[in-house]
Structures are given as structure tokens and as C-alpha cells.
Length: 75
Image 1: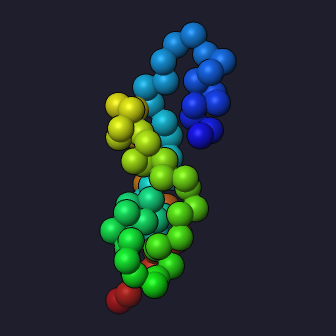
Image 2 (image 1 turned 120 degrees about the vertical axis):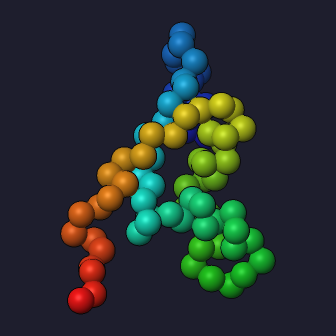
């Protein structure tokens, strides 16, 4: 919905959307796979933005895909 509202006031077509997508922040992918489960991934917190972009040919640009400091390496 937010993309459509923004598009309404632009002359150019939106073709890229920058989204926070990384291993610790992959809920927009898990959301579509956990449809019939009672898990945290079932909750739609992003309005299915990934599906919207795919349906409307909008390229995803990942924001901070490596998230240094969030993952711990076990030794």
C-alpha cells in the first residue's frame, strides 16, 4: 500500500525498493512459507512487500545484508 501511495505522486514508475533483508531479518521470506503454522514467521509485519515487488517487477535492493555484529560465531 505504501508503494502505491508513493507511486500516485510520481511521474516515473518505481522500479527499485530498498528493503532490510539478511539472515537475521528474513521474515518477509519466512512469512510466505509459514502459512499454516503457529510460529512467529506467520505474522505479516511488512504487508507482503516482497510479494508486491515481485508481482509489480520492482527490483529488491538489500539494505545491510551482512549485519555485522548481530551474528555470533561459535568457536
